[in-house]
Image 1 (spheres, rainbow, N blue to C red):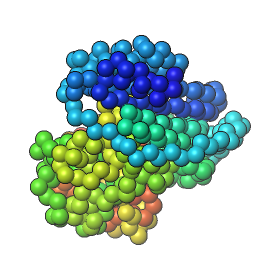
Image 2 (cartoon, rainbow, N blue to C red):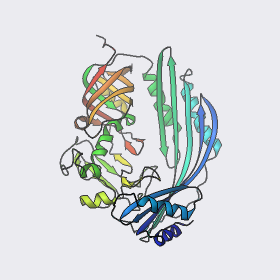
Image 3 (cartoon, rainbow, N blue to C red):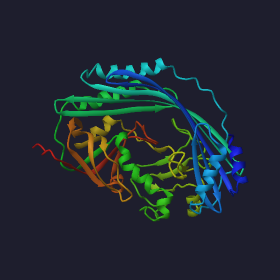
Image 4 (cartoon, helix red, strand yellow):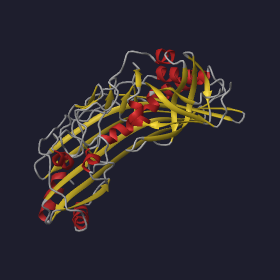
Length: 431
């Protein structure tokens, strides 16, 4: 059923306003387990979400695959009877990108990438067990509403990921690395990063115990930056749960940190959000000074913010809420090796267990993969070690920013060198 037909049916049945969000995806991937190709996996998904307002209350119904339009409308209207009173605020500026025909990546190419990575790792560390996935996905989203909006967007992304397990007696080590792009993932870059980490982990050493500098790689930086992004969420500002509620224009983090949103950058371009609002480049922090918060249409109107296209759904069955699109941290000039060379005694943290800090910023996490640094050199892997502190305070103690950036979810970030991190360990420190 065409989206406009659903909208017309909903209005006919008594809805004040209606919106149809449709999402589809087609993907193919080569999956490897225990060093061998397991399967070529293909999938196609399509879903429709109908949001309606009736007597100022909102209802949302979802269907997957072919839909029964009348049943979907009836369900949405029935749910609206129990919904919250929500202002009707629909986008009306249509953005329609031309539909593209993407040439599929041949299955053999996906297999070749996976085999290349596994072979590259096992040539140096043949006792390791590798899993991997290389694939591509074509996604499309359309949004149509009763205000006349008719927007459409389509994109393709490619990605490659590898997990390496290394068992040495009762010592277990797991390394995870990946790469995302819109053109071709770089298997050689993944291999290099994995081999570095395995090489550093050849020896287990004691962690420095006390307060020392810590390098957070791109894999681990989100442990800190997740708190920052949550603090800039307009809903947290409205609820006054964000510590930055009244701090726009003030210095809140290290002057080495500049963060912006760029919806057109990288493997996840997004011309409009899940409410149909055109997305914009948005400066959050400039040299540590807080510039902006982000919100969906309702939150932005309440706070007096510009509509920047930050209304995102957690899935077809979720209502739009404030979300960030492609958060990008400006890089520095130092390679990872140069960052390590600056540390007389400390840690390099690459993987942590558990989530990051909440809005309070209080952080206490176990290190899943970390390495001791002594006199500018990586000595070996540390075990049974924790780091603690306050994320806001730690991000005011950044003393250097790395040059090379990687995607960690929707965050594009370099490594950060942070001083004054509390380190503890179950293992006694060697004299």
